[in-house]
Image (cartoon, rainbow, N blue to C red; front, side, top):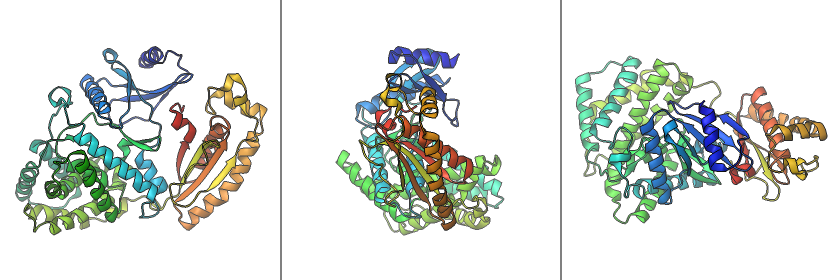
Length: 487
């Protein structure tokens, strides 16, 4: 019933029939997402039984869009049936791009540029998005990140991580420092929009620019919290010197947007907010990892501990400033916690340095895709000698993911032989790269329009690698994402 209503909404908006509807991976909530495509248009359809959350997302989105912030456009709504359509931003998040392109512990110039653009968008949504935003009527559940919100986060950590870890502690002393920390942070300027979960997974890369998603839980709050969330995201493991560069870039951007932005005050609260964000994250890892035994959250704990050690050092360096934060017992417990167990036991074998293969389709008219890893490129296969379905009218507006095109290629071309030959070339590289601990390989398929032969070849190579090798595979249909109608 839900899919039928989504189809009806799409057809009314697009004025064309639905050709495909595909459920997307489930999130951690009751929301369900689908990618719907017609003959020329595509959209992400959402179903969410929580009316207030829907309203918050739609109101926020329309408001942010009016301020020139990169957020998805809302195409159509039917809130009586808990559904709406939004812009399709593709499949590639900043988080995926991070692991596909980073070189060991170094950021390539291209990756640094994406992160710089992301902190620019953060400053915009915090400062420009705050202007004229109706917090009282638009926010979902909570309108302001205040002391009570912080205490909830700290107690989440206490009950779901600290107690589960088995480290003994004095609850009275710990609670006293919780009060001190939250009183201190409650003094920060809260005249800004707080995204609340600003991390690389909530930043989509569309037309090589960052777009922000999943901000429906936003509220009025202090600016440092969101920057801390991005730069100190545990599993992202951003190098410390890179964090500092991005922090400085953010401060310059905020000052350009608002001449009254107080950098001194921001820095007085930045590292304490990094600390509370790191503590809150440990609470989530404790519940999802130590308690529910979910591997992804367990494997993030070592990186979170690394963040704790780092931020405690930053706080010590800040102790001589005018803003003094005295939380000796909390600092002591956190430091003991980092060595209480061998947290590295939760790292999957071979996860660090695992090979990422980026498989792309592209149009030769636009050029071979850039290698953002900094390696200068990889295997490039020219599909233009294969019989082209794009020359025939029935196939002009569909892609290599549509069954009609697939049937044409399998029956009327030599594409199967072509792909097998490509595999014979790629396989030795994959196996040798894995042996030597390399982290990035690029495989690209090009044709005239980047629509039929290259798309099918790209998908077949990606499927083969996923099924036969322990590697991360990132699929990138360049032309389709640029056009905004990838299936």
